Length: 233
Image (tube, rainbow, N blue to C red):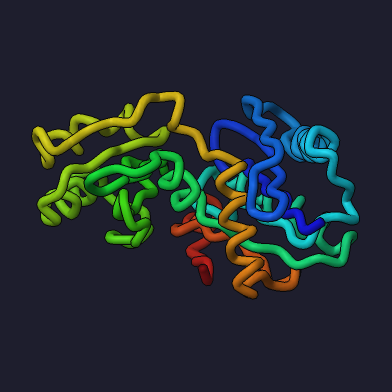
């Protein structure tokens, strides 16, 4: 049995999912809570038990490496690295935006996952809703600048994610009737998609050793900004 465990703690929820031979076997998600590191380990055990998969069956581990909430991303990456080291398996760092984009399903235009980055910015990018090709790079965007970049493509846009609600008017003003929103129940990062992307990367031979996995924040934290220190990723 070749299985991949996917983890997500990057945003408003925490979850784990198991993919076996390219098919989702189980997904467990709950609202994020204090002591997130303890909850994600409990979710891992629940997902493995529900999937009928033992730790020894895992070929790799996938985790959202960012962007997202700084603490949540750190918790997920640290948990994934610890488990992977203990099990002697490689890891795959998955973009939370790419995982969220995949939740929309086929769409005749662009899919734009948008996360609230605070400080009047959004973490966002855009993917072709039919081919999955990335069209706009992931970055910490000014919402209006992101809206204008989307508008320049001339294509309809499906927005989803926790950054939509606070900035929908900025996006709508740029896109007009080409602006659309996915239902709110699709606005959270799906661990099953994280696991599937991890499975694909593992099968392609692009998993990496645990010590090579690093968070991908897309911008500096407040503490780093106060110190004037940047991140390498």
